[in-house]
Length: 138
Image: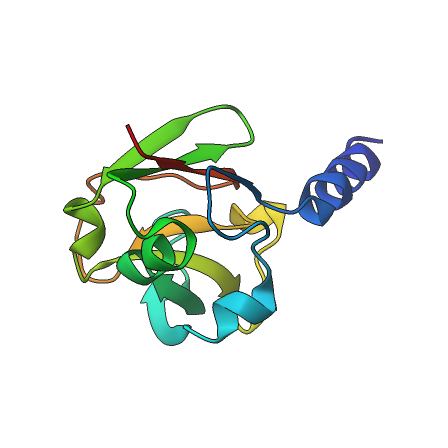
């Protein structure tokens, strides 16, 4: 019974698009992200397995969604939030991951999207299960 409930919840959450707030772009889809994407094999901080991640550098995502904003805020399904300032988004190791092994990240792998670090031993700011991105202008 728990497995069926988990599958239903996963399907509901996974089908939901990532909501954008104060963005110059009204919708964020995989085709849009794929235009700026990169891939790299990395060890997951969650299950310590190696995966091929598809990602967009955080600076590119910020420029795509909210070029002139002073910060970008990511919110998770559980309402946890992380804010990256304009300066922090320029860090070359911080990326917005949205695929694992060329497939959309499902809820079991902490998707639909998450922030990962390409070469940091311990993430400075960490968020997964991202369902909302907000451009902070003030």
